[in-house]
Amino acid sequence: MEARAALTTRVDLAAPLRTRDLLAAAAGPVDVVVPPEARERTGAARALLDAAVAGDRAVYGRTTGFGALVGFAGRADGRDQADNTLAHLGAGQGPTLPPGLVRATVLVRTRSLAQGASGVGPDVLDALAAMLGTTFAPVVPRWGSVGASGDLIPLAAVAAALRGDGEAELDGRRLPAREALDAAGLAPLHLDGRDALALVNGTSLTTAALALALDGVRAVHAGVVRLTCLLADLLGCDPQFADADLLARWAHPGATVVGTRMRELLTGLTPTGTRPLQEPYSIRCAPQLLGAAHDALRYVEDVVTADLAGVSDNPLLFPEADKVVHGGNFFGQPAAFAADLLALVAAQLGNLAERQLDLLVDPSRNGGLPPMLAAGPGQQHGLQGVQLASTALVAELRRDATPASMQSLSTNLRTQDVVPFGTQAALRSLDGVVVLRLLLGSLALGLRQAPHVGARRPTASASVALLDALEDAVRPVDPDRPLEQDVRTCAHVVLTTDPEARP
Image 1: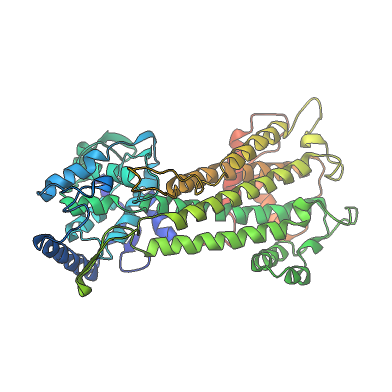
Image 2: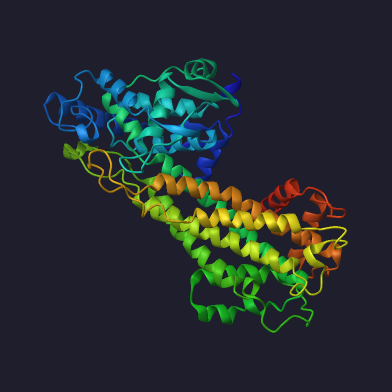
């Protein structure tokens, strides 16, 4: 069947989940392996759940109502309770999430459930794995989660689509979910009360969005390092701003890492001797700024790694100790803080790229190149439109850098009296990757144009290779033309030609 074709990536749920696994799921389809030990764990937890219910032990969401209605008895029939779980959470609104993000979310949820602490049946794992082996993607509204008690409303839309309710995308077409399941060769998912709650009661959307955003920002960070070195080479700067002894005395590990990379890229640079003794901060302080960003990204990666490894749910079941433990392992505060930090990093990376472009188009600082890098100033306007647009793009990133994790609002009759809003923070950071790539492409286009209007050819071999790639991909701006596609093309070149990029 077409929807099941070309399973090029294998994800074994016995191994730690990685960002590259999420990227593969987003591109889909992937071969998800449910190991025997996962079946054993989920089976043992399910047996404990059944025994607890039979013994009249209180189990949230199975024997009780949900949220603020926990003090009331739930529906006696498990399937009826499942229906009610998803029905009352069918309240999402707004634009829909990208299908790839939704599929990555399903993989994160599958890994959490496979650890055998949620009480779902092994058949639920099989159904989720089967979905990921196709191009099926539930249609999920963006608005509705507060990032506490998990991403309830978005994940409820996922579960509903897997049951045949709502809508789904298959091979790029939006269909009624039941039709999409049939076309993909998938059977509708049958759930009882705990299955449904376990599917929705975790921060899997938040985690997936944060992981994908981290991957995107990290790639742009590497691109800005390369473009900073190309800028310094084209201008003929003295590379002492990346001196090893200088940065060692700074004592911040990220600056040391970035400085080492910059010295590699700047090998062979011959200064012109005509630049100022001290360059503007957008060049001179680049190792410190980009180094701090490197350290911040490392912290975000630690949070993502923990989220991908952990169990996000409530309650958790521990068969070996005969315990059903109620708590808050669905509270997305770590991801909220990390996503807010990631938004700040993105805003400063974007600001650096915009300031470097501003320097490059300014004849008072670019070594006498024409204003706006125009081939015939006045008759042509070169990068003027791109520079103007880059200012607007930076404003977008700055506006979205307001921390979401400080916006807590009490809800659900004050049972959720403090919430982290990690979902909003993570989705906003993922949005910022798109803007950040455009700023990267804008700077790259300016650097491609500079030699055409009189800048020297670079002398460092890494700079030569990067400039050659940009010149092969984009013709000079002479005469003027619309440049929106050229900006995107230049970003693509920078992001796909880095020899240091991770596989």
